[in-house]
Image (tube, rainbow, N blue to C red; front, side, top):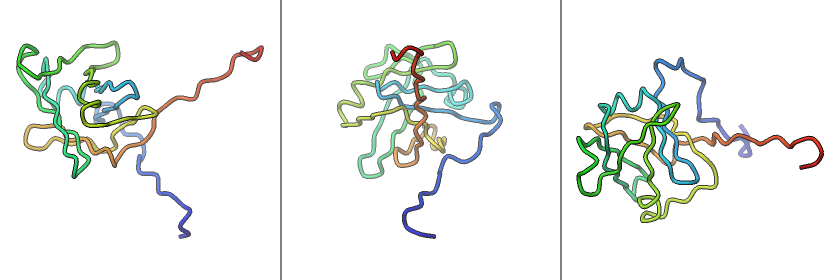
Length: 132
């Protein structure tokens, strides 16, 4: 195959009941669907870790949002979110679009997310009639 081709790494859609969906938005919000949150153990808060050498985010569930350095897990209409702006600023994680992690996986009780294995999920906004 010629070098100008890029392989799509997102894969096909899986049924919702089996899919772990985790995204990181350009506003530094980590979002989880119910399956990902349940695999974490339905925690009220998490610790966030980053490996610079592996370009990897690890999310560890913790039993309380009152623990030092923990990020509370907030409920939203379609899932759960963690406002990770201080974490992203500290480690220089800057995004221009929302990214979905292709293969989030649980290892040693932590959810691991590889920044090198993501696809953009930003929606293209349609122009309104009348040129606005």
